[in-house]
Length: 136
Ligand SMILES: [Zn+2]
View 1: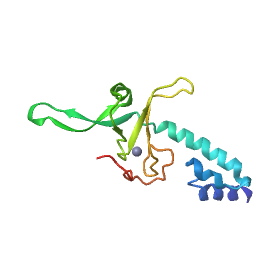
View 2 (view 1 turned 180 degrees about the vertical axis):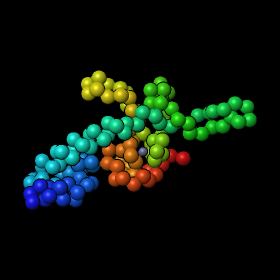
View 3 (view 1 turned 30 degrees about the vertical axis):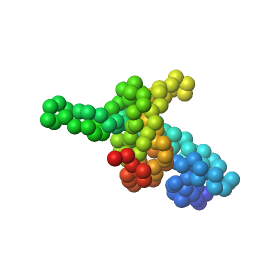
View 4 (view 1 turned 90 degrees about the horizontal axis):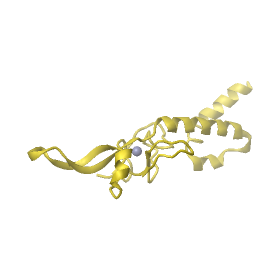
């Protein structure tokens, strides 16, 4: 009986724990559940790291040469410095983060503004949507 109550609480809490700010409204009695959810969220985030972004640049040769969004690895993007980068999934603007040793983290892109409709974000709600201020 007690266990099924806990499971129900987790279900109801679907959006809490994956999106930091919302977690503040969790009642004290559910603190343990909240912490578990955050651990799970952290694991998910690590597997969905944005290691490739898009940058506007020339591609192709001759008459096929065109200017537009092209995929670029975050590592290559970091060398371009002043360019604007966007998320390859939701087209929201992203900043590039260098790799770090502590905490151990590969170079990756992060949204400037959260998009709950992007699986690369830290508060993905399960339904993919273009970023509200997508770059075109
Ligand atoms: Zn995105």
